[in-house]
Length: 529
Ligand code: ADP
Ligand code: ZN
Image 1: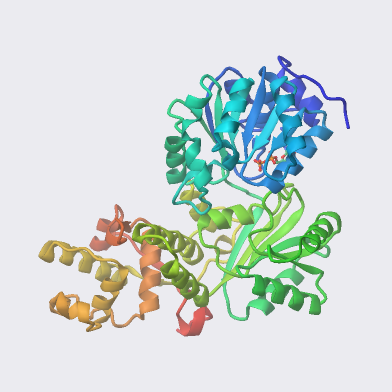
Image 2: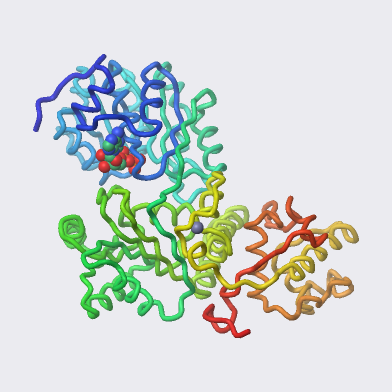
């Protein structure tokens, strides 16, 4: 290893060159570094691979004292610290895997001012002793990595993050950074509030990954579809195949191997040695296909992953973005491919219903799922839809399946009008609003108990949508939600007219809807005309 150096007061560009070997900062890196070195707080929203580490590590090295890095993944912590030490940085960690002598050696080094970067897991910080220790030394910056974990509604909530709200009181005057690659408007607002960063400067990078081509197709024969997708890739392409369950992971890896594809399974239930061996082969050899649960990938630094395939629907757009983002970190053309089916939706709705959370929580999960499905069912550009989800407007990209091969559509204006006028009537005549289920029962003319109780069979729109199946209607609703023609409100997810609804009701804007959506012609294959 290189000699350990003290970089206090060094020019940030020199540090970048000496520690990391890079000639220049990228994107917002220089601006963040400068702002934090000057003592400012920062919220940094950058996609995976953009280079968030540099934005807190460089200020930590340049400012006097130790940079505290709060990171949720102990496994990653080891790798990060090892890599830093190998580059001559005085880095260390404190966590539960250490022996008492190791821990006290680190503590002594910290107090002696001999550590520039100290990694801790969030749960460590809930121990009063840790705070007391840190207060006896000198901190230069505090970085909260994976800051979206503080969001109770996000896909990756960690209760220990909630306690990070009072870091400013515990360590007054120490600049703080919150960093994440998950950046819906809502997560952004929530983490700023919960981590109490009202005066922070916000650095929001583009979430576009132009070298990734997005492709989403309905599941018909998933394994065969997967094999032909993989076979269509250049020889020797490394890839990751994500599945939700361990069983599917194992079965799929086995199936691919039987097809003479160099596939390996990876999930948290496999023995540690096997996981390590598979990961090592994936990193080292060309053309290995890792079939994995989402346990695989966080912190895996393999720039030339040529494809990421999903054979099960991710639970949220954030998850999808994060996972597909592991493709093409080297900037070379890569593909994010997915097959999704009605079974995925049914299974996930069941999991949501069975989950232990309260209604608000379940409604939120349902909305995550709907947003994911809206991405699957869009007739527009996938990338545009994806970026819009992260609050970033864009033009159609020309590098996704819907841009390259525009999907077959049907004119959904009349269906949309039927639905919207039912919502309007319920509102005007009864002062009522309902969620998708009841509206679909009304449109399809289902005489359920609730319909009879509410006398919804008396409405003029009762039964006017019997020409579409329940699944069709669900898809119509998702597509209208995705376009702002409908909005879902409150803990019950009741539907109301969105900003774009008046034009549709007047017939001023067309509503092309996708044909090959779930539930049509037996599970989402081709549709007979
Ligand atoms: P993130 O945490 O945002 O996912 P990392 O900090 O792990 O990203 O950086 C992603 C990759 O980009 C790493 O391989 C890193 O070495 C590289 N990188 C970061 N900053 C620069 C830079 N200024 N110039 C060149 N490469 C960089
Ligand atoms: Zn596109």
